Amino acid sequence: MTQSVEALTTTVLSLALSAAGQRHQAIAANLANATAEGYTPVRLAFEASLADARLALRERGSVDAQSLSAVRIEIEPDVDASGQAAPVHVDAAMVEMARNAVHYRG
Image (cartoon, rainbow, N blue to C red; front, side):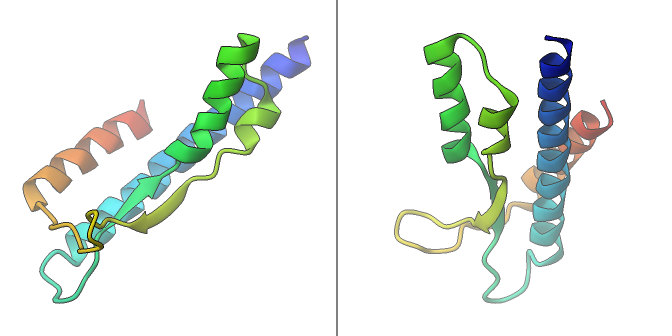
């Protein structure tokens, strides 16, 4: 039992740190290229793969390390429904970066 709790904790912490680091990279890339012509902003995407872990939680009442290890964190283009690049709002991106830094340090 202790081993599974430790494995789950390690997996959750690893996933959270990885997501925070990649989110920071995406925000930094957007800020660095905010005025670059033709730049397509990026965003972090892992909601679809997180859905499987949520489903396991709903069905079994718990999540195991295997369910969480299937969660994939990816950086993808930030585009609207028509495929057009979303605008980079520098002020909002700076707030998001500060918020992410606080979460990452916390």
